[in-house]
Image (cartoon, rainbow, N blue to C red; front, top):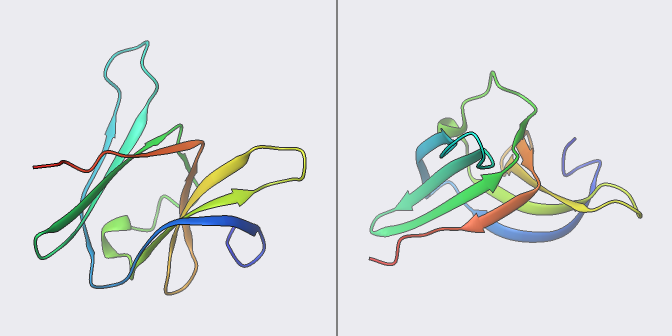
Length: 109
């Protein structure tokens, strides 16, 4: 699945190559909590962190840290289905993973 062959319902966040992916961690607080993938992007003193719930990895061989810009989009999979969050590389459109929900958890400090 890529943005080229799926209808992007809405671009939620977009980060060009001036942002570096500085932190990626798979987290599960306990057995009852939903698993989530935490991703942080930084540029100078600017930081954005996101938690992706129920991530589905499409290409585990690619390294998110080496991305050439990141796009976080809501993609409509079908007219009857729910939107899905897609995280892809802006440069080549490669989809790193999809998820059901994304939350901006950027620290306020």
